[in-house]
Image (cartoon, one colour):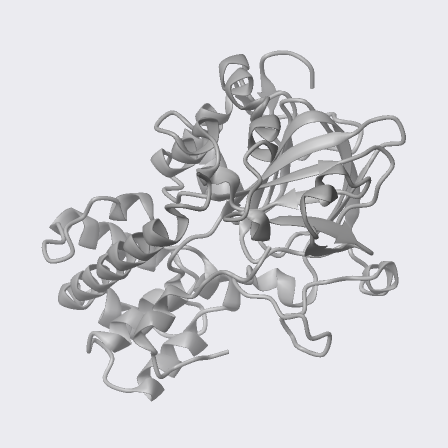
Length: 375
């Protein structure tokens, strides 16, 4: 995965702080597949569930065996064959192979017959089952998550190591299409704890995102393993460390559904500064000091933004954002600082207006980019 494109860069903001059967049992699941707590009948039911959205999403990883319903699975199960059939000059840059645990260019059509794992990026626009009106990406966008995901496809022969241990700068849902795959999953350590939205390839940088076994052991990372099979889903918030490999007897095809949200609460505060609600970069810095990194990197409510006219923000949406601001962890500051921004309805309204303008502009740019990629 590449770092999340920072939508605020468009405006060049001055401030840059650094179980078998039809039901799934959600909860703390062990490597042998045993789970407890709430049951879900389908992936769409999970994405609407208040417990998942409030207690799990952007918080902790979960394993959901057999959660993809039969109708959805039938629709997407052969997507890999259709996508490989569309390989061509306009999309070959999206096809990668894995060499020594890292993605590399595929190197031409002969690479499709490689015995190494293959990645195909941004396949949500390649097939109707993924990007159409009833497709998988639309299911996520229409849910309370409210983000149209980026979907990558991974195809691996048996007995192969995938990407080495790393964390992603976006939440991901791993959906197993065929075969099986073993996932080593570890709780975040270091910079991964703060829900990072960017990564660095520089090992000396605090946003470096790769891990050796020695580092995981030295840092005392808590890890467990899951074996994903057809219709299983593994959810991991950004920062969660993971390393996949196929079993000795099974190939694997899976989809990685990435939740690339447009705005975090840190971005929101930058927007308040940009629209004049905060009068200086020092005032913005003071707000960044109020909130822990995890709160700053939490996504703002995206579903509520859908379809909102940029210059006619409804009062109910402003009130929702006021409530959401109150729910953040403001422990480092007194109530006055929170109230100054929460009670400034015009500040919130103007910032939401800016966010919608940026979303619309980004959507137009994305449409131009992808129009001819998957002919």
